[in-house]
Length: 182
Image (cartoon, rainbow, N blue to C red; front, side, top):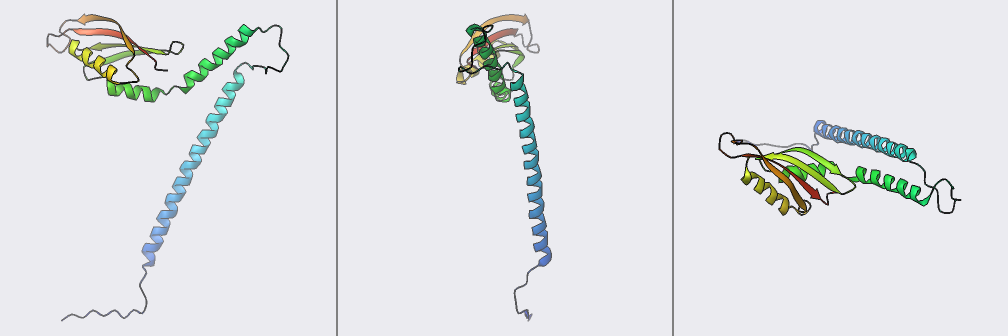
């Protein structure tokens, strides 16, 4: 018979493990503080860059200010359109658009170029498909995506015969215009 007697009069606290836990929590908090500090520095740097780029834009006078005889309403409107175009270009999220395109483009299709037109709000895509079924699959996927469904196939042409690794299918070169992207 084995008897185990605990002669301690109070509960035992493992100080070594408790101190290790405290140091781990403090270390985690210090790392988080450093990461937030780095993010704050990046935020201030980016806001300073935006302020500098806005300072480089030609200043538009308020309506209450006297009108400069050398500046017509047409000149001011052109400058406002120019500034709005710059803001529109900076506001567009290319990474989200490229992620969407990556999800839509099937394995048999390669995109060769993307040409944005911010004024028209369109993107011209040029690419190569292994065959007609792959091109059709790509167009069906574009139609299924509500943000990319407004497109026009501009042209398609046979690039090479037997392009799909000897399968006898023609390789197709195509270009299309996607509207409403911006």
